[in-house]
Image (cartoon, rainbow, N blue to C red; front, side, top):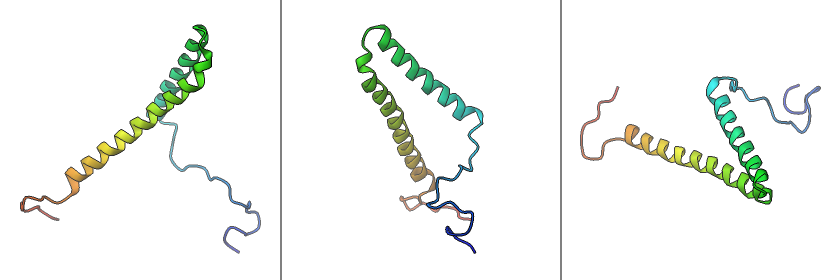
Length: 96
């Protein structure tokens, strides 16, 4: 028997492990930088008596990372357009 209802299979199916190796240097460095920034923001707010702003500060910090991801995606799409789309000026593009 195959499929999601076969014996020994959990139902409903839960998340499966990610096949990508996350133990390499650059993702770990990025996580360390992000976490240290959040810790500094929260403790800095606590030290200055402004801990009530912690939720807004953390959300703003995360929005910064999300907006950076969006900018990176846009830059990537522009580069794909410049590199892989055919020339529009009538120039002959060599094809393999």
